[in-house]
Structure formats: structure tokens, C-alpha cells
Length: 366
Image (cartoon, rainbow, N blue to C red; front, side, top):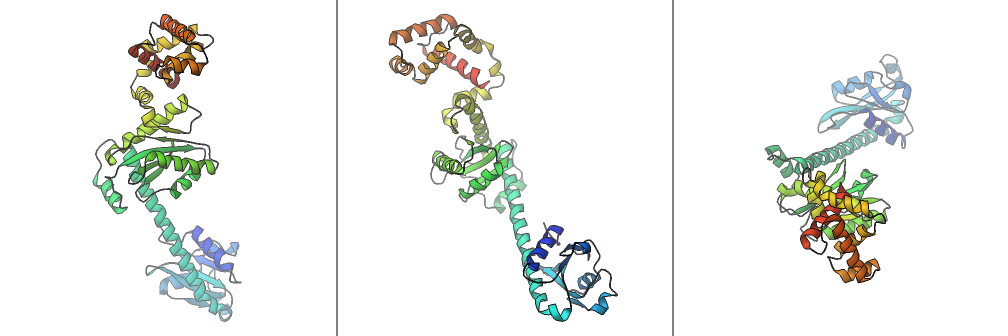
């Protein structure tokens, strides 16, 4: 946290004050070194007048005669910059004291206000970083949480025992998306920017995750951001947020492959493919993939794969599947027979259809 005037802050003080006062402004750090000035040639010089201000704690005028004997000084006035009763730097005005004396106190007050403003901004940014660290721990820590975690949560009045759901927003410009997300958060929402996107732990005190996602999606579309949005499952308290976050990640991964045209994916709609993705080594199960590979080998026109896909989407309803495929019911029956003869699995039987469905999913998400 800022304790003394930095070069960046010093130059900001110089630029702001010189816009309204027609004289050169110098800002010196706690060692009396000029770190901000309207006269670039004076940068990094020791200012003797500033050293006297730092020693005495009060303003110091330099006449033309005195300037000739002081190192790095010109005629002018120098004032201490105070923060919380401590001198953090010195601001100086170049010119004859009798001509600039009326402006000196105003410049000092402006310098202190700018310093306080920067302190406030840095404190806010520091709090943001600490709050994001709490979110990082919620999303990634598998072990029990230590006392420091709970101390930070208490410091920011984070109620850890509210129901929340993890949402992930991916876009090319994460920083711009983060700004947008911040505009549409409630008091108990938590957020962080991670490599895989902006993560929001949405409190469900009012409304639902889907309605919020719809609202956020509208704002993202209106802003012209190409984006993808995914949601995990609702968790009753902080202990399950890592699970919800992992679900949102996996849902985004499988949803983007199964339905690339969509922009919002909800875990409740993708539980089976997510389960397949999360099962260690399951994607290498060649016994299941074998059914799909055989079907693909014989189905050069891909009409059997399309038929099976639609048949599954229509929950095994032959009439609706035939209508959707624009084929006769007898043609559908013939194709289902072909699928059975090729794979050894009868799509009309629930267990066989499930295995064919899993084979299709594995082929797409692996």
C-alpha cells in the first residue's frame, strides 16, 4: 500500500496542478529527490529546500539569493504533503515567493487530495485482490479452510452459507467482460478472473441462475462480445462451490462440442456427457466406442448416424423421428434394423439405445 509519493503519483500531481496554475510544479519524495516536475531537466535531482521541509515539517520559501546557495533549488515555495499526520512528500512551486505565495496553500491541498484519492483507489484494488483470493480458494481448495480464509471472508462480510451457483463467462476480452459483469452483480455475489474466463459465484437469494444468465447474456450480446456462458449446479453453501465450478467447466467443454451454435450451457442439461468427461479413462473405453466406429465405417452417407441421433433426440418416438427426418415410418424401421445388424445393438431396446447414445457422446466429446 502507498506510504510515500511515487513517481506516477508525483507526475499526476504536477499535471493536474499545472493545468490551473501558470508556474512550474515539482514534487519530491520522502528523500528530497525530485520525482515529478514540469521541467524534465530537474528530474531525479536532490532538492535542498525539500530536505529542509522534511526536517522541519513546515513550509519553506526560497528567495533568488537563497536559491544560488542551495543544491537543486530555484526561487519558490515548498510545502509538506501530509497523510494521516505523516509527511509523505513535498510539493514545490517555482517562482518568486511574493508572486506565488497566494497559490501555495491551494497547491498543497490539491496534492494531498490527489494522494488521498490514490490511497483510496489502491485500498479498493487491494481489497479486490484479497476478495478474489477468497474466490480462488473456494474454487480450487480441496482441503479444509484455514482461519485466514474465514478472517478474510468476515472482513468482507461474505456470507459463506448462502446458496450459490458457479457461472463461467468466456470471451476474447476478459477484462471488458469483467467490467460488464460487475455492473450486474448483487451484494452477495462473488467473482474472479481466471485463465478460463470470468467466474461468478451467483447468490440465489432472489431469482434463479437461468434468469440471471439470460439477463447477462442479453447485456453481452448488446455489447457485441462473442461469448459462451455455462452454469454448474446450485450448492447450499461454500463447501460445494468447487464442485459447481468444475461442473460449469465440464459443461462448457462438452456443450461447446455437442452444440457449438449455442451460447449458454446448463449442467442440468448435460449431466450424462459431463459424467463421461469426468470419469477417469472412460473415453478410452473402446468397447463402447467400437459401436460408433463400426457404424461410421458402414455409414458412408451418414444417414444412419443422423437417424440414430434424431431417434435419441425424440426419445425413441418413431413417428416424430420419421417426421423430423422427412422419411416414411417404414424407412425409419429399415434404418434401425440396419443399425442393429451393424452394431449388434437394437435401438428399440432401452439398454441398447443407452449404449449407442453413450457411444455417440464419446465420439463427440473425446
